[in-house]
Image (cartoon, rainbow, N blue to C red; front, side, top):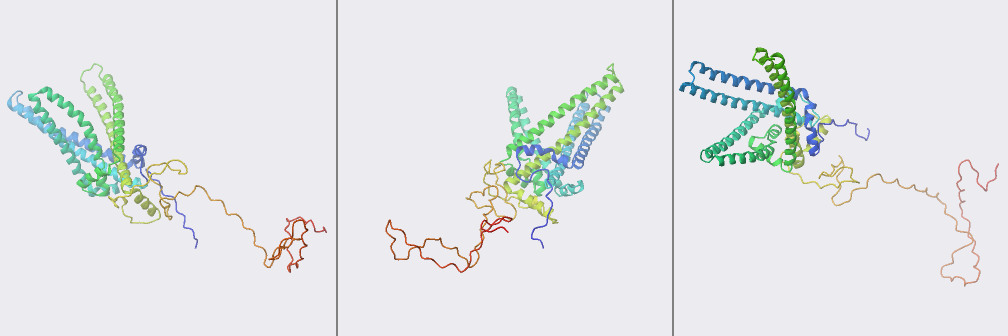
Length: 457
């Protein structure tokens, strides 16, 4: 049996590297999930957006027609007419608000599917829509309930503030106007702060199956240290899509105006002019829905990437993901969900790595991961020098057995206890020593040459 392990192919790369992410990586990979599985994400998001739009239009239109049609039986200007008019307006507004909440809830379903897809795309897994929905289904009502609670809390706060300003306006109008301006100016940073702090709630509900209160606390905790990164990416994505929508709406407005001019040059409200206006409005709405679907997918991708990055930095999620990928690629089945393991784990901060040689990796605040099968170097020791050590020097062969080199000719060391001869006298001839019993081996000569003291044949 071979001593070397069997060869295994390299792990498939996901949409993100499995280590803590930088601002540029999160921003650059925001569209990666859409490219990774466009048929599922874009198709599902567009279908849900169209369904929500139709539900809103048909529902509000039906409520308005049912309520305002009663005005045909009443005389204009009477008390009954005014009462029915006010009641019809309230009914239409309430129905639009309720249906708007339902449309927003459908958008949260899209966000939940996108969260599940991005989490698996990070592991280089592409799942069909049926499997993604099966993973979101157990927490579907939690997502709906969280969205409704957030919307109702927002409406309640706005109602209280507006009611207070109106009450002040009856007594001091300038004070009410100044207070309104201050409230609007304060609402912008406050809304950005709250939306960023609660950015990770849907991802926490979907991936960890957390309850609403626990998900809010988890999002509040995980976003610490990554608040400005999440805020910056979210604002940039929102500004980009807002600018794109404005740029796209301009040509369609010109198209609608041109069609109306060509079909009805006199400007009379003819049926052809109405048809041209309807066609332009439908085209504009179709493009708007497509753009909203892409924006919804990208924003949900950003939230998921920030969630993964925050857990990598605080809880070592990257270690769990790497272990999962290694075992999966080795052929293991029935593996536990890595996103639900070690939730809330605290890891020791990793030492910062200096940039530059001999370290080939940038200083991100995290040290290199130890290679598999080797223990990491002990703290306090200098890192091993880069490169390979020189090969050991060759050793000379040992001398043959039974041979000792002869002493130098013409000199013998003085006997122990005798004095050296006085200066000026010639040294006594050395006592001849007995020749060694073993003949010395011949000197080595290169192959193909003859020794100098050997006669040529």
